[in-house]
Length: 400
Image (cartoon, rainbow, N blue to C red; front, side):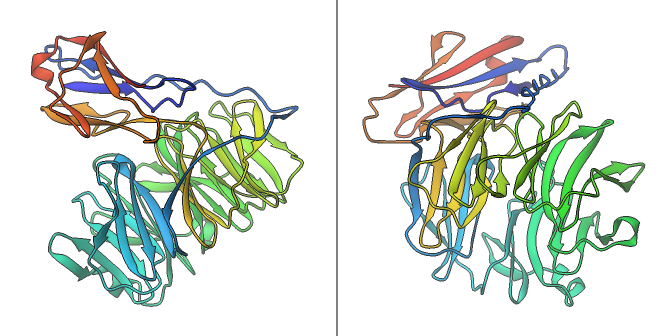
């Protein structure tokens, strides 16, 4: 059994590199714990930097209804022309056969199916085509505005954001989530680090921010700050919770430090994700970027909506006319392995650079030794726990 303890893709200047640390435990049968993230420093005096020159990819050259990031750096795009899937291993977009109208939510279920909400209800999409989800019958009076699954391979829960309520589907039952008997319409959701040992789902409504915890088989709601008026919500790879409020930026670090800072721009929304040290801000003057200690405007990118951040820290930006994927720098991606994965059988892993122009090649080292690829376009190799000794193993991919 192998456990992936660290390995968010690392954007670097010069030769781009990504590193994964594998800990194998074939004999002892144990699993190493993930390292604790290091909280960023306080923002008492936010530092402003020069404009960021981003790496920008045009993913879709027309207006979109919705786009989401899925595991494996996959992007699913819903537009007037239909549904498309994009992955690092595909040469171009792949059409998904579906008959949908005004898509509002997309989530991947634990069986690999896609669950999609649109104007007519909820639908499942998979190898056998499109089907009506039984959940539609339970939500006939609800306009579904968004879908979210529990992170991890099991994806145990499905969270459904509605126009009147927030719902949770678990073990065959649908529950309305109403802390203090108050409904949570159009809630914005983000998974954060555990609080007191319980997984925390952060939820922002128009007039509150709270954490929903699984405690004793039920949900416990902890109101973070009843004075906040959040217009967005994100949790970064450090475990810091971010929320714009009245144009300022509120934050709560993993060790409980809370702070509100005022920037020279009005902040409307924020976007980040697990494994990402990038925080993206939609402001009245366009897209901004924050990496610990420094805020910077992003050159040449207008933003109407931010639609998610992948594990490499790249943000999906809807400009109103196009869908862009924006990165703070070049990135090398490991496809087939994710931070925290446990390997109990042989798998295939591929390495992909986020850019093509000027790329001379990719190399992969395992404990300093060159890995024998099984294919070169894309560069893929096999990992078999049975062929590796117990202990830590360092995987490094470099792009020249």
